[in-house]
Image 1 (cartoon, rainbow, N blue to C red):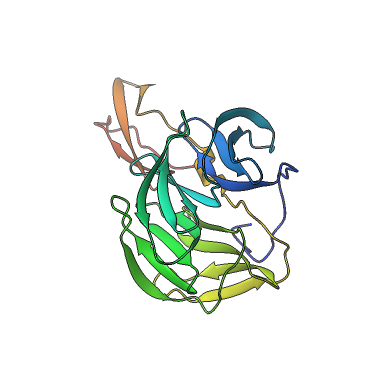
Image 2 (cartoon, rainbow, N blue to C red):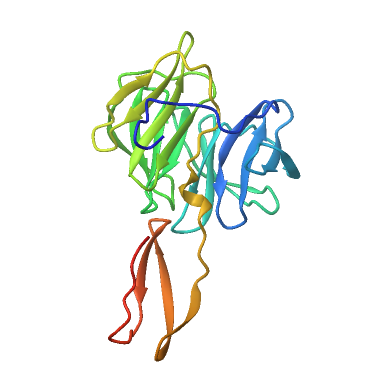
Length: 239
């Protein structure tokens, strides 16, 4: 849980041998790529396949939903691409000299990647340009998953190499990785329930002595900026 991230458990498991991308709050589905035939699946939150988007020409190994530009990013070997979740079309942003192993996006739309050289990088969401953050202290291998908890801003890494599978927390300012749980088994899809809460752009509330139209600006996925003229006897309070 968020209070104790070292306490890791599988909430929804699937036997579909998929590399998880990320949850898409725009449609309420989790997306994953099947390891053996490159089918892009959409799943419900119990791990059940509810549809096939397309058969891709490459295997995607990790993904990240960007809440600022509403775009799914994914990595495949040395390539970073965007994914059209309706058609499965891939648009390559950059082909690196190094292999991408993990891709994650924070609440501000900043992408981060773990690479084959053992470093953490920030990634330009428009052109894929990489900027070194620092060494993680670990050298990844095989499919794995990097993911932000957008509520806390913490960056987590389901890490794998030739010998070990660990659950890590990564400092996005230095790149340093700290082990939270050892020998967890290979995990190829990590996501957080923050994105499960969705708000429409505009809601109308009827209040005592007045009507107020409250415009929700979606900030950091679940945090809300409220712009409204409120009657003096009415106040909004977060539960």
